[in-house]
Structures are given as C-alpha cells and as structure tokens.
Length: 255
Image (cartoon, rainbow, N blue to C red; front, side, top):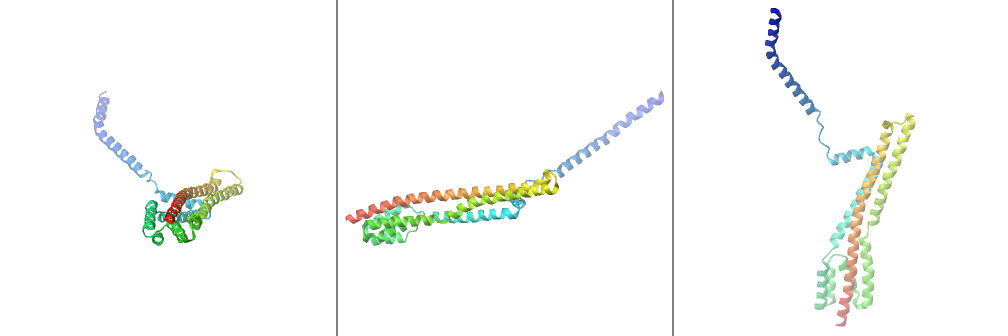
C-alpha cells in the first residue's frame, strides 16, 4: 500500500516537468505546419501577355500564325486609314468663311491659292471647282461632283482588305478546328479507345484556333466600323460644303 502511494506521488511529481516538453513539441509542430503552408502556397498569377503567348503556342503555329498575320495586317491598314482621316479633317466652317472672304475681296485667284495651300478633300474639291469657273457654273458643278467621288474613293482605299481579313480570320480558325477534330479522331482510332487523355490535344487545338480567329475578326470589325463612320461623316460634310461653293460662285457671278 505504501509502495503504491509512493509511486503515485512520484508520477505526480514528474507531470509538471513533462508539460513544458509537450508545449515545445506542440509549438514545433505548429511551426512545421506553417512552413509547409508557406512552401505550398500557390504562386501569383501570370501576366496576361504571358498567358496569351502560352495559349498561342499551344494552339500550334500552323494555324495560329496565319490568323495572327491577318490581325497584324488588318490593324496596320486600319491605323493608316485612321491617320489619313484625322489629317484630312479641317475646321470646315472656318475654311468656307475664308474662301468666301477671299472670293469677295480678292477674286477667284486668291480663293484658288487658299484652297491650294489647305489640306483635306474639301479644299481639293473647292480648288477643282474654282479651276473651272471660267467654263460656267454647270462645269463647276460637274467638276465638284466628279472630284467628290474621287475623294471618297481615296478615303475608302484599303477597306476591302480589312473586310477580307475580317472574313478570313474566323475561316482560318474554323479550318484549324476541323483539323484539330480530325486529329482527335485519328488518335482515337490509333489508341482504339475513347478517353479524355487521347482526344484532349486535338480538341484543345481546335478550340484555341477558333478563339484566335474570332478575336481577330472582332477587333478588326470594330476598327472597320469606326473608319466607315468617319468616312460617312466626311462625305456628308463634302456634299454640304459643295453646295455652299456653288451658292458662293452664283452670288459672285451676279456681281
């Protein structure tokens, strides 16, 4: 009985000494878990251009490169047209007022000189009309209409190529889709089994080429419509100012 009491007391006396050891073990375990979580933490997301480049390479050069070429060429023509239209714009009201002032104060030659030194299709149309003033107002009107059509054709130059690239980009993408699906069925036939691992490669190529073609077409379509809107606005402006020129020359002729 005494021996049992002594052994119980010894065990009770040792418990406070084991507690710090248990706390240290728990602290070490928590530190290890935190370290593992820090090591296994997911890396930050890739930049967008890296992700796009990765998807581009996964789609395969054979079909992605032609679509990319269509996009680059279409954007180059679109930017050139936008710059052309931007530089062709002038303050129409101010220009017409200057032409009328020069015509009333200094005559036809001064108005022609002003038009010659002004950029843009409206100034060119005015110059062509003033050049034929000595042939009569009917000749002036015909010259204005004819040269207006010429200027409109110059503004629309290159739009047919943009339209071609808009149609060609998704077509090339769909061709890549067909080729990718054929590759997937060839893999199924070679493996004699249908599994996601077998067909994933071909289907992925098919979807990526379609996506690239649609993205290219959408971007070029936005630029195409923007250019068309600017051309339509400029054509309306040309027609309005052409009527003003005829009215000015009629009033000048009556003097």
